[in-house]
Structure formats: C-alpha cells, structure tokens
Image 1: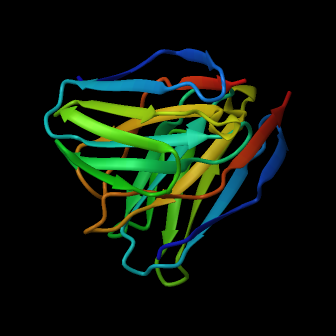
Image 2: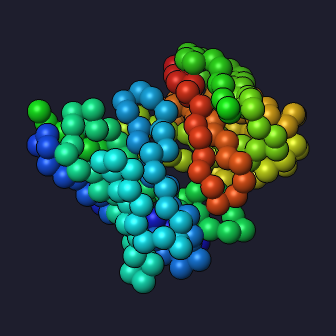
Length: 112
Length: 112
C-alpha cells in the first residue's frame, strides 16, 4: 500500500529564515497532497494542498512543490515567524481511496 | 459553511469502563467521516472511516468500534477501556474521496 515518509522530524530556524519540509510517497497513482499544521493541543488544520496536475502552489508565505517523477513534495515557509511553530503533517491520497495517508510529522520551532 | 463538533472535550475514565465519543457535522450531506487517535507527541492513527450510513471500515483491530447511525453522526465506542486507549481522539470529515479532511476539536481521553 501507499507509504509517506516525512523529513526532518524536527526543524529549528531563526525568525525570518525559510523552512522546508519534504515528503516522499510510494504509489505513483497518488494525485492529491495536502499539508496540515497542528499547534500544541489543537486540531490539525489544512493549510495548503496540491493536485498532481500542478507543479507548484503558493499562498502568501507558504508554498508547496510537487515532483511527480521523483515522487516527492515539499512545503516551503518563507519569512518564518514564531507563530509558525507547530507540527506539520503531509499526506497523500489517490482516486478510488477514501483515506489520506499521513506522514509522521515535522516539529518546526521558530526562534525569535 | 460546514462545522464539525465533538464531545466531550475531555474525559477521564477508569480502566474497564465503557466509552462513547460523538462527532457531528453540519452544513454538508453524505460526508466521509473518520476517527483518528493521536498519542502524545505522535502522529495520526486512522481508526475507522465511513462513506455512508451504516458503512464502517476498520483500520486497526482493537477493542474499539464505530457506528454511523445518521448521515452526519459518527460514534466511537468501547465496552472496556484499556490504559493504552488514552490519547487525543479526532473526528474528521471530507466532501468525498481524494479531498482534504477537516478535523473536529478533538476529545482528550485519559484512562486511569
């Protein structure tokens, strides 16, 4: 079945720097890739997603890129702020499935 | 707009006691519904999902069960709780397959 690997497990950056989290997936049929942000004690929230017919998507300071050939997708956060500190989860899905396969999460800490 | 509710928000139960967690969704029809469990500092473990009334798919064999008695209601149950059942239980919905899931506020369960 589909497997999603996420790296790194922890990431510390200085405020204002960029942060990149990378995920790889195993099933070439995967065509939907959402990213979730989970603040401490809160629910995961969908922050951005991308479909396989698009190579890049941007929303203000966050962007997601997809490389279908290499089967990996990445979350890019620019000009990081302390409020970006959270755990980020990537996920993958494909047609004919009702599930999302989640990565193991990345704990991002942004230091002032 | 759609909203998802879970209750209770927190629960402390003795080992061997029963459990019933409820999730309801408003503002949509025939959603896919999901139950996840998250241990402290860990990732999202899919427990059950449902694509329609009375249709339940189990992902992890354990002492939990799920039911969907109405279109927008999803219930997680146990007859006898174990210590290992402690965790953060999240309900989620999606409009259809291969689409983003939206999480409820969660129930924090402590089994003593």
